[in-house]
Length: 218
Image 1 (cartoon, rainbow, N blue to C red):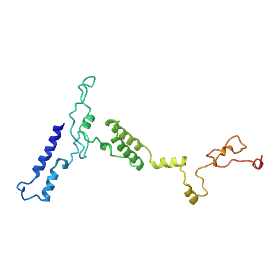
Image 2: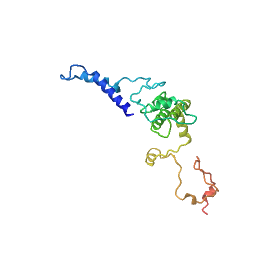
Image 3: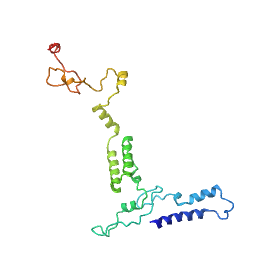
Image 4: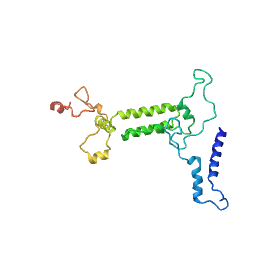
């Protein structure tokens, strides 16, 4: 409502004028007088942690005024019922952030980074309602608290899935005798073979062939 917004502006002007010392209009104001006026403005007042009923919300400039656009329904089973407390809070907030669940994050750095990233993404998502966002973050924190450290999962995956290819210039310089990725030359499938199958790409030892077969020129 424009009238409510105008009332907030006028309240700030009254606070600033009330902080001005009397009798100094022609003599000028000192730096202390200017600082007193700045501290008297509504936006510079100490934040009340209980500004949102039922929630510790000690953040500045999050609470605004409720829109004058009518809400609710004009019929059905929800007609005449009170609005849920969470929806009532969101209607009065300028920035419905997820600060209320951004606490007691996982101790593990990787899990903590996952939760923080999810909070930042969901804060800007328009396709989720506020209650679902809070529920998703809380469940995510509970799951990560029950999981082991990320180092254990990383070590297990590195052991079972050694697919990190080492650049050729580093392999030639530091690990000439190591084989990280097994490769085959071009058109290797056309090569003659005395078996009905090809060795596996994960084979750790070469296939055993008798000397007579290996010496066969065919």
